Length: 146
Ligand code: DQA
Image (cartoon, rainbow, N blue to C red; front, side, top):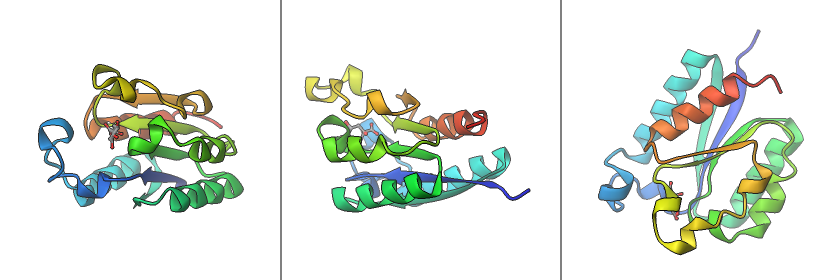
């Protein structure tokens, strides 16, 4: 049986991991994060593809692709989490399992981060474990039978 495909989608500013506020987001670069996701995926029998964009339109397009192909998604929408109804509506079309992830714990930070407009349309959410949030999300997808 071929490995189940999973898309890991990272939104704005996440391409700057490693140099961006390392006291909050850690020292791991986006490339290292992508490698860690692929390694976790292969242990779990998942074929993981990691993408990053600063563009809301591109993220919406990738979610349409996942919706049409029935591909599970791990999404760190970055700041779009807090206000993008376009992303929320695109995510609502994905029938396969979807996991909202965050490196930090937005609930413990500034009040504008306490709202997630995508939380109500994902299968589940994992926050606050640094890059470990992604490994946990992939494990959740591997354990789902949808
Ligand atoms: C983040 C949290 C968001 O509030 C922030 O805008 C980000 C990163 C996280 O991974 O902790 O860009 O999604």
